[in-house]
Length: 469
Image (cartoon, rainbow, N blue to C red; front, side, top):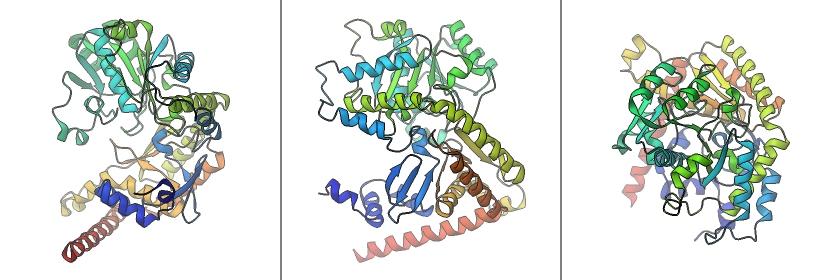
């Protein structure tokens, strides 16, 4: 058995072998191809350090889970304050859980009041979908194309990329999709399908950082009220100050019927998700002794997670992180759009606050694509943003990644207290990477050869080991 003390001393090679043997071997290979398998040993604010003492800027921030940065001292202190308290004790009412629910009722818009706590964004989405069906007595659910709400069965059913869905079909029934940002098609669907809920992200994250047209969310709110359909807003990634307001829906003064939260709610330290709704909807779904226990979670609302969330909210408000996200987001977008004019490989820069995406130009067409049997296009669509992320990591010590539903988009979502000079360092690094890859065709082909070579080497190594055995 390996102790915690021993685990903290494991080398990069030893860590890789543990993951290869006991977790996901293919993911290990993917990380190795991009040199994403570094051993990081320390973190604070917007920075992490590897085992060799190299300092990195984190512009991924746990896919938006680190709005207050790595290891914020006030969040750590809050968890320390409850270290002697029972963390899990279901036969009592937890004061820390009650305090967090009260605080969320204060900071969330409108009459949102009652909370259900769980452990992740996907679980919070599951609870919202179940709540909508229980409260309305309706079955149908509507989501947007390109959406991402998680990978559990219900959350996956209302998500948008077929790659993640096809092997698990049949998924949850009674679900339809409409284009993100299209009001007319949404109303046409609401007229005829008698939907329990319409679920969407105010800004699509994994869809490629897609910002809807101005006024879209307000139109959605009015249509849902008109047809008796509950509006579920998934603010797992956009909430807690990320877009320049505490919640992205506040930019258009929209109040959802159900608000879904997670990621940065835990202060980057503890896993926690929340589903917040009105008193009326809660009573319709779970009011009365016969319905009070219809949906529960063993670890939901535990003491340490709720203490971390209370501290995270306090940090976000006291340090005015939404305002900082708005100002630094505008600054970063302006700098990136200047790079877009400079480098033709950048197709579009878009985002809101410090949730920003860089989309690269479409795959190549013509003779080269035909000659490769479509391989160049396929490599480009799936891996070019990853190659950029790899160069930013290994050459410039910048941590980034692509978006799941559109892997041709590089995502940028640093801690909200990121320094302006660190943003400048990122801009310089992206500029340098774009210069180096002026010919994306050559970059893709070169990377393809390298990847094939590495895969071949790993395959050869495995076959030798198998032979020896």
